[in-house]
Image 1 (tube, rainbow, N blue to C red):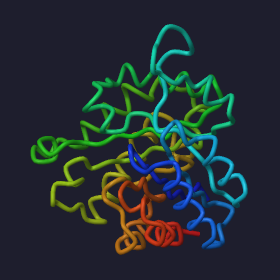
Image 2 (cartoon, rainbow, N blue to C red):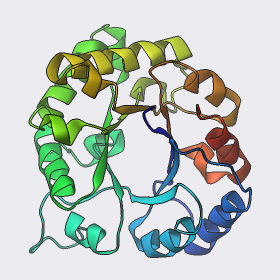
Image 3 (cartoon, one colour):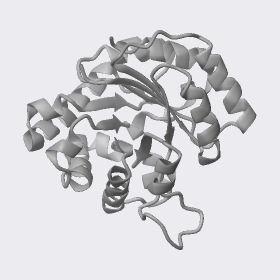
Image 4 (cartoon, helix red, strand yellow):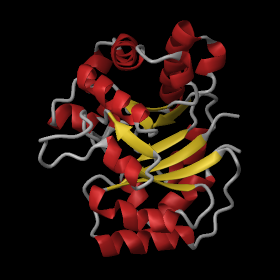
Length: 254
């Protein structure tokens, strides 16, 4: 069975002390993680080493970076390269999050370079894709997502895309008061898997974990994760509350 993942994205939140307190509370919950399950924590760059020292002691708990540079090294003040992340044994990195696309103008072409950097440095990308409200209202979301996948991922080989992780973000349903139903989540996840199958074959498509990134909470996690093509969630606000995220992890399929 493909990986079932609860991925926390702390974004630009918490002090170091607050982050340590949160992680210790989650670890002390003694969650029984199955072989096919992972809890991933994408934390701010200054906290990576400290957080990794905590996750390394817990079964199937993993620390991830929230972003990476598109270049390997050089005169890029303020950037953090995949080579640097690899040197401290980081396993995962978020690439293409909707906030990076919107606020920092990251295009699909830039994301190609970041994905290549990650793979060259033995990091696993968690590739984010999603559509804004205007696209959803125009009912062109399927074509929009397909274009994101084609332009950012379709240069990859079958071996590179196998066991990949994709996170679908319905941007229109995040912080807007609108809600995406579990059926809408399933429909888009099935579409993403179908796009991958058309390019790489059904077996490879079935190996890809597709996470849902639309306001996952403890109250809705079981329903969302129960959908056949939903393999967990990329969680924002709820990942900052220990008991909320513990319940989300427990909601993963076994």
